[in-house]
Length: 87
Image (cartoon, rainbow, N blue to C red):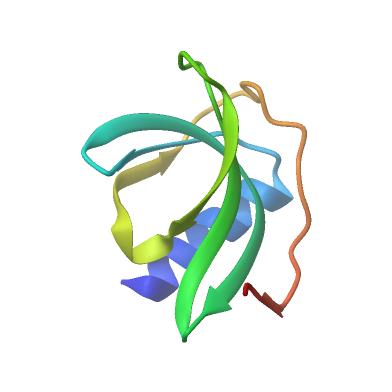
């Protein structure tokens, strides 16, 4: 499963696509920007939009549910794929 989310998020970053997923029990519209690991777990830096308070955030890939890439660009301007560890 983690490999599946990595590929989905990586593809969304490369293609500058929006990801829609359930995170923390709520539907989220996200623009992923960076992928990395923290304590061996996949983590993604994203921008959440189309909500009351658009904001930057970090999410563990294993906590995303029902994730999919949306057609079109939504609010995404793209990010970078880097191999780094989040602190």
